[in-house]
Image (tube, rainbow, N blue to C red; front, side, top):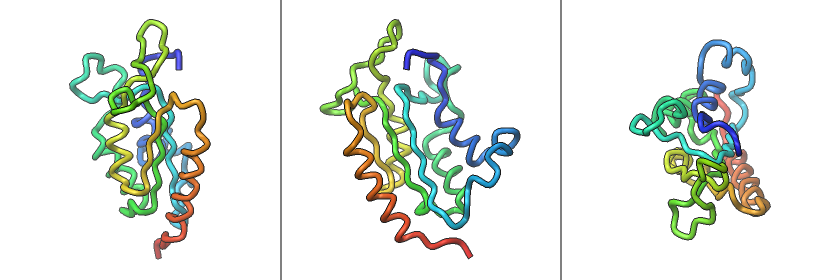
Length: 157
């Protein structure tokens, strides 16, 4: 929070896990065929996409592209991935995050693209408001989801 409006959490995720070059080399060995991948996204901004007014802050691709990149990185097995996101929810009914104030950086920008990405993982995807005063329930539920994913996981080979 209180930083640049040019955060690119989704592009960073794709580059770290499915990209090429220095970033991918730095993370060599991180992805394992015999383990479930848990991705945690925490941001007070959204990746707005190619139609945003300010393209400087946008990650490349769409939620479907990000999903495909991660699934491909896990050998095509999207059931071997759990995604968790703490994001802005001002666009949701009952949302608790105030809209992001571009002057003070208080609040959080709604994150529909990140929410869409997380939803693509079905029961293995969960999102909650980054503005919550406590994340205990969110992470307790996440531990249960991760446990189920691990029980159901069948390693490659």
